[in-house]
Image 1 (cartoon, rainbow, N blue to C red):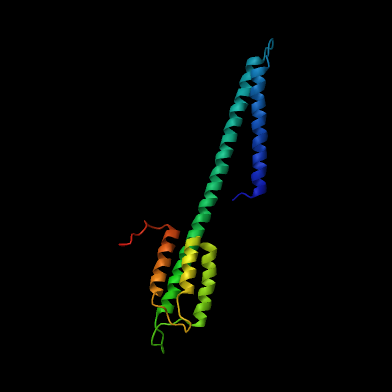
Image 2: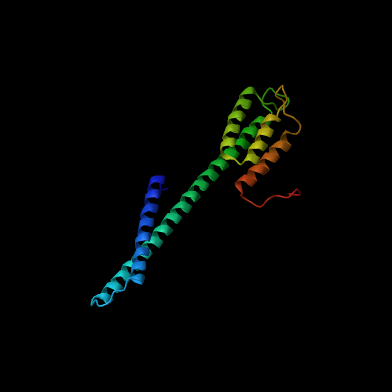
Length: 179
């Protein structure tokens, strides 16, 4: 990705070249070269330079535009991959939390799991769209009772978060209520 200083320099050089070529075109149009034996040669030479300059300017613009698009696509791809890893981690974390552990009669969330979910929530805040973050925050906040036991609607909250995560990733068509 081009840094800002290089972009400004390229824009400046492009503007100077554009002004130079516009001035040359204006000179050819306005100035009358009468009684000069080299006039056809100079006119054709200026025309060749003008054409080459125009091609160079257009090529430069295309390269800058392509570089900008490519860097945006690479960034989007990296963010997508990180989101996918994060959402898989969330599912794995919550699968462990929902699982009845040895010595437990019902599923419960330990203080350590709550702390892990809090830091996962920070990662979700960093990478996700606001709706997905709100959904995950609601899930984390309403997941368990004070004693750590899972609430009855915990699985519904998890499903709501997963649906929002799917929309955030934009991996498939939206699901209907029937799906």
